[in-house]
Image (tube, rainbow, N blue to C red; front, side, top):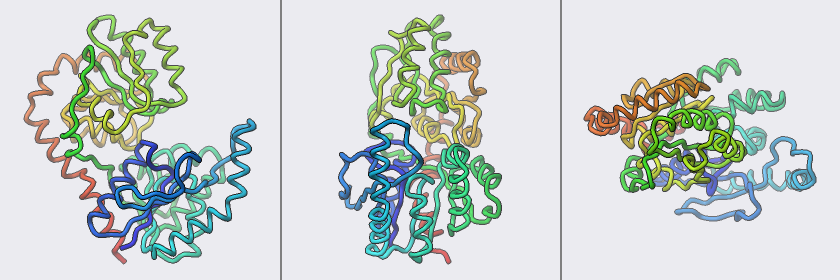
Length: 382
């Protein structure tokens, strides 16, 4: 089977969409399928085409939304508008040259309108994989995006979501697509986790990991840690990730008089993300919104205690995981108390045979190999 994956972003960017796309591409290639990846060229410094581990990656400037009202973004936007025919034609040509049997669109972002229009010109099976923000955030920013989401899902042959929570959100927004939906969670690579050593810090540390944006709730984590640091002196907070709220978090740490206890790691590689999880006392996921919560799963498989908010798809994971404790979102006091409770039970988490067995079960249920195989079988079905 010839599969063309179309993704809103791809490597070297690192996030849920990018990790999912890369793991699916690798597994499908191992299973004997021919795979190519088409994605947004979000920086002109990235090559237009390259081969990564035997998979062809092709990048175009996909127009998506209006730019900020300043000179450079507007000029960039105008160049992308001029390139629309070239981008559209280039995408169609790659579909045709690859003799594509299935197009798998990941995230309803920049390339989505092009895929929607091409579905009328190029005959093959179309699979849309939703990731969360494309359902929970983008459609409400403009009526045009809501119309695109609705028509794209109705046009698709199959729509995958990563949690029952997201299924409910989709069926509420778009009528008549329930029969196309199938829940396939994101995966975890236990072999990758096993071979990466734990990070060693100067002191024990609590870890927050994710993009520094409002929905991830890292500001709440800083407030909770400030309360915790009054009682626990030999403890740091490491926040791994970058984003528009980085300076806000830095200022908040200074205002709470804990700048020397808060380490803003910045952008993390895949290697360092896993190493940080494995070295942490507690992994904290303080999200205000989280459709699946892949970081929760990675923490659980690493055998680490996880404190997470009761939002989105996280409670679905927590039902299966004895080392995940839930709190309500946006409550720094409750978050502080739960982190403290978990740290007092540290030996239980480290020694529990139940946790080790859970990790083994999860690694089978959420393996990328199994997910890729299940999805490819659905793609092959009439």
